[in-house]
Image (tube, rainbow, N blue to C red; front, side, top):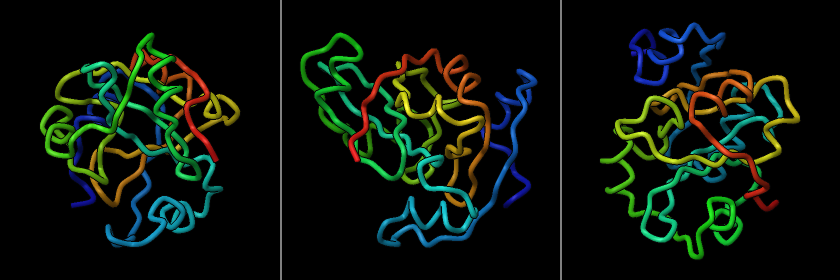
Length: 159
C-alpha cells in the first residue's frame, strides 16, 4: 500500500514539485488525531495541516488549517467573499474530492475546489498535508501548496 501513488502525489510528480512522502501509523479513531500524526512524524504539530471541506454560501471550499487549531467558519466565509460557512456533509466532501475523510488532500482533488490556506503556513519552510490517503503525509513548501491549489491565504484557524 505504501508504494501506491495518489492523485496528489501524481500531480506533484507531474509538476516536478519537490516533496517528500512520510508514512505513519496512527489509528483513524485516535483522539487528537492530528497531534498524534505530528508525534508519529516527529515534527511540531503546528507544521501539520488538515484539510476541511466547508460550504460557503452553498459553494464547497477547502480550508487547510493546522491540526493544532480549529477552523473559524466566519473568517473562512469572509476570506472568500462569502457570508456564511458550515462544514460540508462528509459524503458530499468525499464524493467531490475523491478522497476519504482523514485522507482528504488539498491537492489532486476530483473537482478543483476553491481553497484557503491558513496564513500560519507561510511561517515554515515546509508543511505537511495529507497525501490523499490515511497513513501518508506529504511535505512540501507552502508556496507550492498555495500555487497548485490556487489558494488564498488568511488567518482562518483559531488555537
